[in-house]
Image 1 (tube, rainbow, N blue to C red):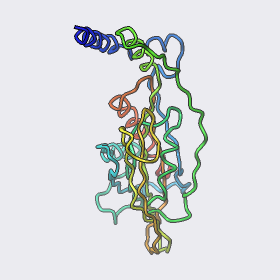
Image 2: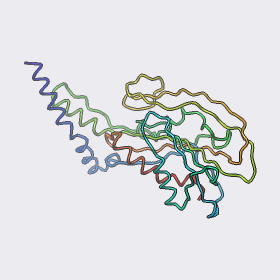
Image 3: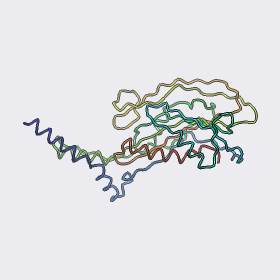
Image 4: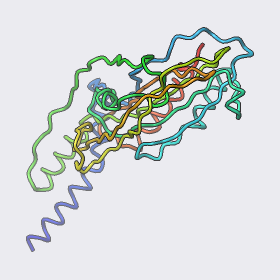
Length: 274
């Protein structure tokens, strides 16, 4: 009988807590809590190069995309649409392009609130395929983390519901980290040292990895081997790294992704010369 009553109480607590996120966000709006509404932004870890504005006839770009993270995120269509909206002509043959934008998703997952994904980005080493010594420094500002103190509840239904309200009021932040190689066509071949990197980003919410990066018990693992190689090409490869983040009270992955995709679309053309 005692077990049955506990099960009923636990079920009731789940039902009561199911609306905690909505209630917390409504209360946050009233009290001007900045986490009540979804927010998003960008951290330029390695910013885009300052290139000369192209002539109209040179606004031809080849865009490619790959995902080497554990997520299923696909950004190719979004990136092409954004470039077209800004007057760029998308070419299918990379040899026909004045600029080639090659993007790779390195990581998508939960990070510490107010970090902007900077901590995760700093573990990722070189930008594979980019010229060494160009755009390899980090321009990350230290950000102050903030959180909402939790309320410790009992094992009864009321205590669990209170804990649910507390958890629902806590900010959660998600970050998408993208490496980009922007290749600019030169009038003659140039020689450069190119970085190669076999690393990729993974996150493990169970805490089975070894380099803590995500909040809520999540972690990240970096398995990276880097080297350089001499290259001669008519295309000079500039390295870019950005973290696109979103946060809100108790934000889920499903809620974060649309916010991050909207922000990513907005910044695609900031990587191309204006």
